[in-house]
Amino acid sequence: MPVGHCQLREERGRLGICWREEERGRLGDLPAADVNELGNIRMGHSAAIWDYKAAMEISKDWNGIDHVLLRNPQGASARISLHGGQVISWKNDQGEELLFTSSKAIFKPPKAMRGGVPICFPQIAWFLVKFGNAGSLEQHGFARNKLWAVDDDPPPLPPNDSVGKSLVDLLLKPSEEDLKFWPHSFEYRLRVSLAASGNLILISRVRNINGKPFSFSFAYHTYLSVSDISEVRIEGLETLDYLDNLHQRERFTEQGDALTFETEVDRIYLNSPNAIAVLDHERKRTYVIRKEGLPDIVVWNPWEKKSKSMVDFGDEEYKQMVCVDGAVIEKPITLKPGEEWTGRLEISAVPSSFCSENLENTGL
Image (cartoon, rainbow, N blue to C red; front, top):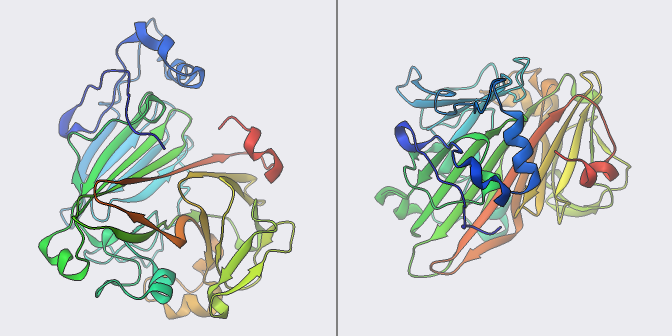
């Protein structure tokens, strides 16, 4: 994904986390979709633009950790904790929560909260089984357990990842303690955006500022809220090879028309398409997941037995969630000194169901 040549002026608000388009005479330089999105955020009177600075709030939780609340003109919202750089809430314009969080989640650093979108970096469980643990890292890496900083001056992204969106830029660098466990210097920049459409967008940029190459695996561990897991199916994974973590990571090929759930599922789908759909029949809602730089998809539901073994997860809560993660696992990313990797995830929630063959043609 190309980085750079942002053509519009950034006006940064308090803590540098607001983006506001002001040079309206230059809209002709933007793609039509971005111009339309700007048009959608008008406030109903002449030349009025949604004030994204006013649409962002910062508060502290009971642990003293900063939270950033993003809002869009239609009333959708996203909440991000600086602990782990984790999206912990995403609501539509009706105030309905779209991400699952366990009622038994532990909200106390350094533990990652069970729910939302934890960031798994620089390794996740399957990576360490295949390639060996990188030092003494825990199975899903340390990024989700660290305190991130607001990035006051991030390198620019293309206009379609900046214009017409409420956003926050975060930055993670390794501490001296981190380097003892994973001896590689890096800069990890995370942008979380809420579009006028209500879509949730996460863009990760990892740069090697080390003197030698390093490799890593990665996942956006996305907990989606569903009505009943037995009423959910996933389209877009048909005929794909997958690694089954419940069968010693043996390789299989998906045979069904769509993935449905009748027991525990813990799979890594390989070389997956850039768009898949998660259909919730009872709620008549479809999550559309679009991704770039993330070739693999992890699908996980712990089902009844495993749910009862997790202290931060309710015994029956497996019915209300499914994890569908954009990921890089089978073929880790290797960065030479100075190189940068970008991984982009966009999730939309639409009120009608449609088949996977229509995904590439939808203007989401």
